Amino acid sequence: MTFTPRTTTVHGRRLRYLDAAPAGEANRGTLVLLHAFPMNARMWEPQLVLAASGWRIVAPHFRRFGEDGAGDPPATSIDDYAADVVDLLDSLDVGAAVVGGLSMGGYAAFAVLRRAPEIVRALVLADTKPQADPPDAIEGRQKMQRLATESGPSAVVDEMIPKLLGQTTRAGRPALVAEVRALAASSSGDAIVGALAAMMSRPDSTSTLQGLTCPACIIVGAEDTVTPPAIAEEMHGAVPGSQLSVIAAAGHLSNLERPDAFNRAVGRFLNTL
Ligand code: MLT
Image 1 (spheres, rainbow, N blue to C red):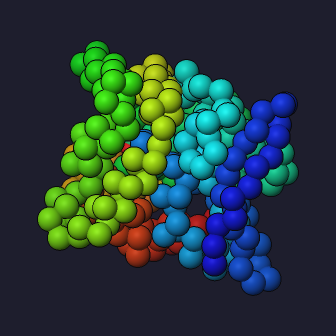
Image 2 (image 1 turned 90 degrees about the vertical axis):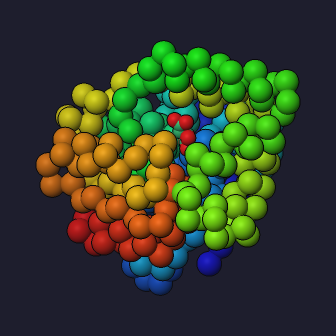
């Protein structure tokens, strides 16, 4: 099973995404996976196996991320990402989809929900949070934008690695650390600066979360220090009937650090739909 890189043009805008067809006869629907910062859609490769249970997987690259992103317009808000996701799903004619986002991808999933709730059949919120950035976080984002511009993507990645990966991964899995570093460092300075602008200006999504009417699955790495388990538990408390999975020995990029446990949690949730 592999992802096929695809491009479609909507309203004159080129949208790039990875696509995996559901295996076998069954087509149980579409699972859209929205990537974290400063990664790209390739971070979802360990989730490809979910296609084996009959789900089409669509993973868009946010503006300027991923291969061939240089021609995209810059992102200025999280709504830019959400608008692209809505346009993409519209053009694929898939109807309502399960929308999953990890961290920044979760911020974008909230924005999709505000923009086009009818296309969200269910939600997977992984290692993310509904709160907007407080002033000190905005200052940190601005500093990181300067770092990206002045010193390049790899300087940003050096700063991000301890936040992205849990202690267990960093101590014992150098190959995975190198893989994540390479994927993140392949992002351009422009993609990074745009994502930081989008994240620092994003609105608070607490009321979006509280108003949720679709099924929701919340996942968090037990060693996540960016969006720690306490935040996931709060989200779980705010959404009656939601499923919560805390993944041991995983940090912020729980889908990459413990794909087996992550896929089990998502698979269990998809089986309830
Ligand atoms: C991410 O993983 O997408 C970012 O760490 C999120 C953030 O910085 O808020």
